[in-house]
Length: 114
Image 1 (cartoon, rainbow, N blue to C red):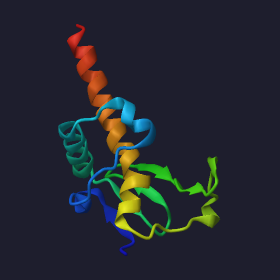
Image 2 (image 1 turned 135 degrees about the horizontal axis):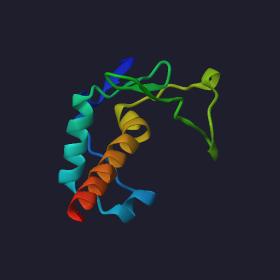
Image 3 (image 1 turned 180 degrees about the vertical axis):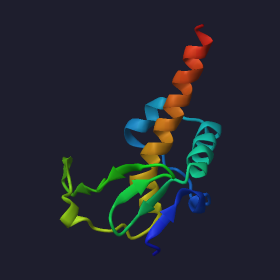
Protein backbone atom coordinates (compact mmCIF):
# COMPACT_ATOMS: atom_id res chain seq x y z
CA UNK A 1 0.00 0.00 0.00
CA UNK A 2 1.21 3.50 -0.80
CA UNK A 3 2.37 5.85 1.94
CA UNK A 4 0.37 8.86 0.70
CA UNK A 5 -3.23 8.28 -0.31
CA UNK A 6 -5.09 11.03 -2.15
CA UNK A 7 -8.88 11.25 -2.03
CA UNK A 8 -8.97 11.84 -5.80
CA UNK A 9 -7.40 8.38 -6.32
CA UNK A 10 -10.14 6.62 -4.34
CA UNK A 11 -13.09 7.67 -6.54
CA UNK A 12 -13.78 4.04 -7.39
CA UNK A 13 -14.57 3.25 -3.74
CA UNK A 14 -18.03 3.98 -2.33
CA UNK A 15 -18.57 5.85 0.94
CA UNK A 16 -20.19 3.57 3.51
CA UNK A 17 -22.95 5.37 5.40
CA UNK A 18 -23.71 3.59 8.65
CA UNK A 19 -24.22 4.15 12.36
CA UNK A 20 -24.87 7.72 13.45
CA UNK A 21 -24.59 8.98 9.86
CA UNK A 22 -27.80 7.23 8.75
CA UNK A 23 -30.03 9.86 10.35
CA UNK A 24 -28.76 12.58 8.00
CA UNK A 25 -30.10 10.97 4.79
CA UNK A 26 -27.13 12.05 2.67
CA UNK A 27 -27.78 11.92 -1.07
CA UNK A 28 -25.35 10.53 -3.62
CA UNK A 29 -25.20 13.96 -5.29
CA UNK A 30 -24.24 15.69 -2.03
CA UNK A 31 -21.52 13.15 -1.33
CA UNK A 32 -20.15 13.39 -4.87
CA UNK A 33 -20.02 17.20 -4.67
CA UNK A 34 -18.20 17.09 -1.32
CA UNK A 35 -15.72 14.49 -2.58
CA UNK A 36 -14.97 16.61 -5.65
CA UNK A 37 -14.49 19.77 -3.59
CA UNK A 38 -12.15 18.06 -1.10
CA UNK A 39 -10.22 16.30 -3.86
CA UNK A 40 -9.66 19.67 -5.55
CA UNK A 41 -8.29 20.96 -2.23
CA UNK A 42 -5.76 18.12 -2.32
CA UNK A 43 -7.08 16.06 0.61
CA UNK A 44 -4.57 13.31 1.33
CA UNK A 45 -3.55 10.98 4.12
CA UNK A 46 -0.01 9.95 5.10
CA UNK A 47 -0.36 6.35 6.18
CA UNK A 48 3.08 6.29 7.77
CA UNK A 49 2.50 9.20 10.15
CA UNK A 50 -1.31 9.24 10.45
CA UNK A 51 -1.62 12.84 9.23
CA UNK A 52 -4.46 14.13 7.05
CA UNK A 53 -3.79 17.36 5.16
CA UNK A 54 -4.88 19.41 2.18
CA UNK A 55 -2.98 21.90 0.03
CA UNK A 56 -2.94 24.48 2.82
CA UNK A 57 -2.72 22.84 6.23
CA UNK A 58 -2.65 19.78 8.45
CA UNK A 59 -6.27 18.89 9.18
CA UNK A 60 -5.93 15.95 11.55
CA UNK A 61 -3.36 13.75 13.22
CA UNK A 62 -3.50 10.24 14.61
CA UNK A 63 -7.21 9.65 14.05
CA UNK A 64 -7.02 5.91 14.60
CA UNK A 65 -8.90 4.90 17.75
CA UNK A 66 -7.49 2.44 20.27
CA UNK A 67 -9.44 -0.78 19.86
CA UNK A 68 -12.13 -1.24 22.49
CA UNK A 69 -11.92 2.33 23.81
CA UNK A 70 -13.75 4.64 21.38
CA UNK A 71 -13.20 7.70 23.58
CA UNK A 72 -9.41 7.35 23.57
CA UNK A 73 -7.19 8.17 20.61
CA UNK A 74 -3.91 6.41 19.97
CA UNK A 75 -0.65 8.03 21.02
CA UNK A 76 1.55 9.08 18.08
CA UNK A 77 4.11 6.43 18.99
CA UNK A 78 1.38 3.77 18.75
CA UNK A 79 0.25 4.71 15.24
CA UNK A 80 -0.66 1.58 13.30
CA UNK A 81 -0.96 2.13 9.52
CA UNK A 82 -4.17 1.20 7.71
CA UNK A 83 -3.96 -1.94 5.62
CA UNK A 84 -6.47 -1.10 2.88
CA UNK A 85 -7.64 1.87 0.86
CA UNK A 86 -11.16 1.17 2.09
CA UNK A 87 -10.03 1.68 5.70
CA UNK A 88 -8.44 5.03 4.83
CA UNK A 89 -11.62 6.15 3.10
CA UNK A 90 -13.80 5.05 6.01
CA UNK A 91 -11.68 6.10 8.99
CA UNK A 92 -9.80 9.11 7.66
CA UNK A 93 -11.71 10.70 4.76
CA UNK A 94 -15.37 9.89 5.43
CA UNK A 95 -15.76 12.34 8.30
CA UNK A 96 -14.34 15.19 6.18
CA UNK A 97 -16.68 14.36 3.30
CA UNK A 98 -19.82 14.11 5.42
CA UNK A 99 -18.93 17.22 7.40
CA UNK A 100 -18.56 19.11 4.12
CA UNK A 101 -22.05 17.96 3.10
CA UNK A 102 -23.43 19.25 6.41
CA UNK A 103 -21.70 22.60 5.89
CA UNK A 104 -23.13 22.90 2.38
CA UNK A 105 -26.62 22.12 3.72
CA UNK A 106 -26.24 24.74 6.46
CA UNK A 107 -25.10 27.33 3.93
CA UNK A 108 -28.11 26.63 1.70
CA UNK A 109 -30.40 26.86 4.71
CA UNK A 110 -28.96 30.22 5.75
CA UNK A 111 -29.22 31.59 2.23
CA UNK A 112 -32.79 30.32 1.93
CA UNK A 113 -33.88 32.06 5.12
CA UNK A 114 -32.68 35.51 3.99
